Image (cartoon, rainbow, N blue to C red; front, side, top):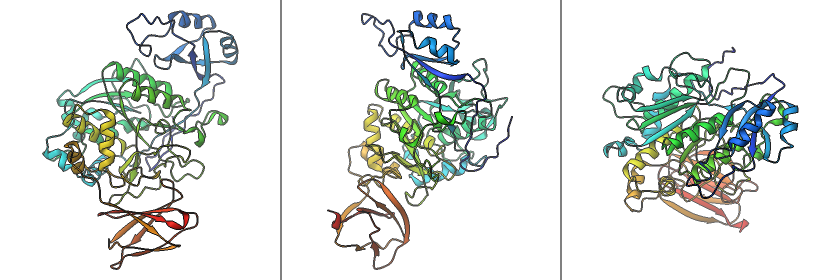
Length: 493
């Protein structure tokens, strides 16, 4: 077993040395009768097909009703034989590796408290909102010591962990003892960011200390195999079967390390290529699940930069990481691919140690809205969160709509107008004077209305700031604590 240090943006690779590899085996149909009352998605896989696989000694690992397939370790002769069968639709290698943002140990207090304060979380606390009555599913790498963490004591004392399951070692009943890798603390820290109370008698710094929790472990980092999408999908289907409608996952799939030719490419982060993103779309659009996914931590890696799957899926709520005062993207936080016709990430909040810890904070925030307005649809919740954020009227592929605000969310839930102040200005030529006297100014220089080419911090001046248009820039978004100004360089109109 290899030991890994806990530093910022740690990348865990899972190599595979065997000649046999894991594959998805998709079936053509389910032998499904539409007279059956069960929906097609929820109808079991065809037993006839599953039995037929035994002819080639195919050992099933995981199955997906939604995707109508299984995963299995196959050799070349098995693949060749299966491809001749009419009931086999497609055989696809499981290629991606796992990317987990792991910060320094025991920093959950700082991660959650800063973000809680940044978004004016006290407004929710004053309303008595704590996620009570909401089922939250966490899909992660492990939950070692979660049951003895002082910050999570209330959750276990009140029997709010309803179920837990290890999808890697299915025989394992205790999620909290016997760590197998250093990643097995990762889910515990994510859990703290959603539900933690960090000092006796203090206000919660995770938004949802009152929610019910369902825990799934789907990644093992030190063994000689890849972090696998099929375990993640199986966990998602399991949670759906239990009525869980809000799910957080701080796992992302991007590049594998067993066979380089099977790695994902940045161009594959299009919301529809990866199997895990397809499953996420089914969960969101057909199963009514609200998925909050960390954007990923490869934003400063020149050969990648973009979000990992399934954060690229249109219907999931992808969360990046920002600095505290203004929605300035942390360098590590992954950006939305330019190829997407929609904005990713959706929102950001403070997280200095990885998007693994911004996503669960937003998950808790979503739980509070579900508690406050249980009749809202998931799309309405997304729209309210976005409308509360400071870049709602000028979103971009670095930080989405920016940082949500709890006070404005409550107002918007009541039908009030509460958007962050916004102004649009035109600039003739390549120089512009912007009338802002803020102490600190954040500027996004964009090549169109959403694609950021440069992110700049400037000190404000009493007479406003002067801007020179960088080459190729058509718009510049100027952000302060009080206002957002969208500057349109008219020479490009």
